[in-house]
Length: 185
Image 1 (cartoon, rainbow, N blue to C red):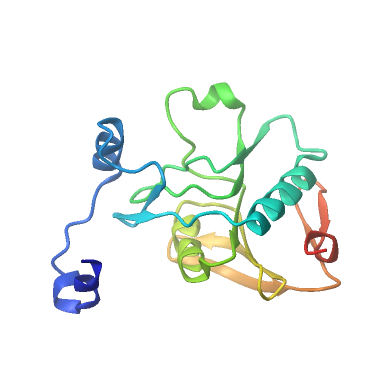
Image 2 (image 1 turned 60 degrees about the vertical axis):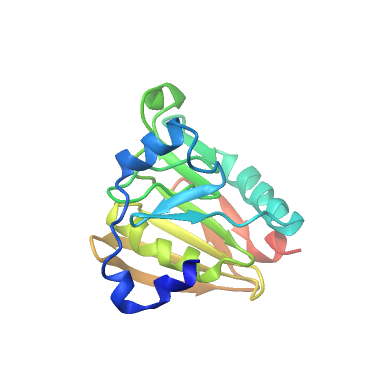
């Protein structure tokens, strides 16, 4: 069924969904809960392995330490972007929960994806996050035991990407420190 999209001539003819159309389909119950809108395409989300869940919890707990009171730590909650509505495994957004009573955040200070079996999809999200002004994006590559750290967003992508590995540490702007050896232990 989806193989037809591998043909360039067909792909050029595909009409993307808008965020508004995606919301209408969701509200009518016509779109699965286990999906994300990525660049106008409804994409099925991968199921979460026990290892994925463990790493999300480890990062979430570390990021919660000393989190500024004007920030909110979110887990698997949507960000509404121009043409997409991804649900990063973890995000830190400005404002408290009441700020988002009627809408999802449109950007974040940090977005994190844990890539166990979804590396290419999660790597493609980097451009979406950069275009939305997400300050920093961490792509956790479980098989490699490394993290790609994207920073300095521009409309077309991140200006900077560095890979952190064993013996190194992730840091946030507010002082949280996450040793990768402890994350992957």
